[in-house]
Image 1 (cartoon, rainbow, N blue to C red):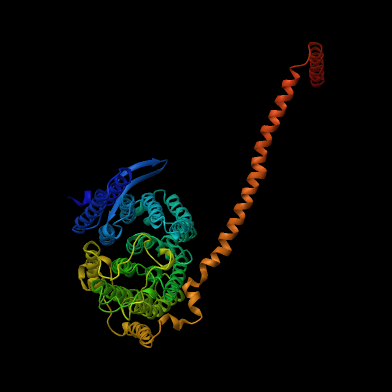
Image 2: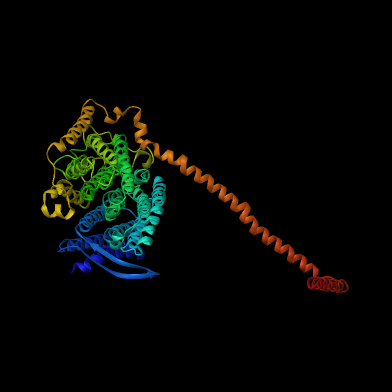
Length: 626
C-alpha cells in the first residue's frame, strides 16, 4: 500500500470500526474482534507510513464556505508518524487488555466501539493539516472521554466525573475554538501549512495563541483546568491508560507542537505557557505524594509530566517535548495497565489495603519497577533520557537567546528540577506500599465504592496472582519501550528526525540524579522505620491530598456564582418571559371574548353602534383632511 493511501486511511479505519460497533448490535466476541482489528489495522498503516522516504502532504477538498475551503488534508512527517505509532500501540494494548478486564461487562460492545472512535479522533488531530478537521477530532475526543469515563454507571462517582471532565474541558474548548477562528480568519484559510506561513500582526497572533492555550490547558489537564483528571479515575482502568498515555492529554501538547512556529513569534504567549507549566509540574508532583488511591497517584503524576512537555515547548525545545511525550506514553500506559492488574487481583484501589504482592504477582511487580523507574527518571530507562532533554533545554534557555523571557525559563528549570526528587519520592512510596511488607487486605465491609473497588461487580480472589494472558501480554509489550525507548536518543536517524540534541551525560545530570536518590532514599528510609512515607507530610497531607483545594476554590468562585446566576435567570424566565407570553395569550382571549359578546347585541343596539362608529370614522377623516 502506498503512503498516499495509508495516510488518509489512518484515522478513518478506527473511526469506521467505531461507528459500526455503535450502530450494529454486535455480540461480545464480534465487538472485541472489531475493536481489536481496527486498532491493529491502524498500527499496520502507521508502520507503512514509517517506511515513507520523506515528509509529504496530501488532501481532498470537502466543502467550501464562502472563501474558505475545508479539506481532509494530511501532513505526514517523522514526528507525526512517531506520535501515531504511540497512539496505535497503546490503543491496541488497551483493546486487548479490556477483553479480560471487562470480561463480564454487559455494555462491552459500545465500550469497545467508543475506544475505536477515541483512537480515530486522536489520530485525526495528529495527522490533520486543516485546522477545522483538527477541531472535529478535538471535539470527538471530548465526547468519547465523557462516555468512557462514565461507562460504569453503577459507580456513583462515575457520572459526576464524566460530567466534570466534559464541562471543564469545554471551558477551555471555547477559547480553543475562538483562537482557531482568529487564526483562520486572519490567514483566510484553515490549511495549517498556510496558517503557519501567514504574517499575523503581533496583537492578533498573541490573542489567538493565548486562546488556543485555554483549550490546551483543558484537554491536557494543565493548571488551572487540571481538576477533572484525578476525578476521571472513576472510569475503567484501561480508559485511564488510554487518556493519560496516548490520547486526550497528549492532544494539547501536540497542538502546541504543530503551532510552535507561531509561538516562537509571541514571547507573551510563551511566557504564559511557561508560568502555567511551572505551576503544573510542581502542583501535580506534590499532590501525588499524599494520595492513597493508586490510580490517583498516577493521575497526578500525569498532570506533572504533561507540565514537563509544555515546559519544554515554552523554553523553545519542541523536540524535547515530543520525546517526553513518546516515552511518557510508553511508561504511563504500562503503569495504568499494571495498576489495573493489581486492582483486579486485590479488589481495591487503596494502597492501605495492599502490600506483600511482590511474590504473588512477579510480572506486575517488574512492570511497576520499570514504569515507576522511567517515571522517576532512573537511568537507563526511557524517562531518564527524555527528562534530561527537558532539563537541559530549560537550563540553556536561562542563558538567554530564546523567545521565552529568561525569568520564565528559570521558573521551568527550578520547578522541573525539584520535581525530580518529589517524583522519585512518591514513586518509591507507591512501589513499597503496594508490593512490599505484609498484606493489609481484608474482606469487603460495605459497598464496593466505599472501600475503593475499581469495579463494583468484581470480587477479588483470596490469593492474588498475575493477570491472565490477555492482560499480561500488553504489560510485557509496553515494558520494552518503557525501558528502552530512551536509547533511541543515541540513534542518529531518530535524533535527526526529531531534531534532538545529543544526550548530555556529564555534570548536567549530576544534580537531577542527586535529587532522585535523595527523594527515593528518603521514602525508603521512612518505610524501613515503619512509617507510611506520606505521614512525614504532617498537617500538609490533607491539603496535598486535595490538590491544594483548587477544586474548592473553583467551586466558590465559579460554580456557586454560576448556580446563583442560573437560578436568577430561571426565575426571570418564569416570572417575566413566561409571564409575558402567558399574559399575551390571556389578554388576547379576553379581547376575543369581548368581541364575541359584542356580536351578540340585539339588532337595534347593533344598528346604533354601527351608526356611531360610522360617524366617528367620518369625523376622524374630516379632521385629518382639514
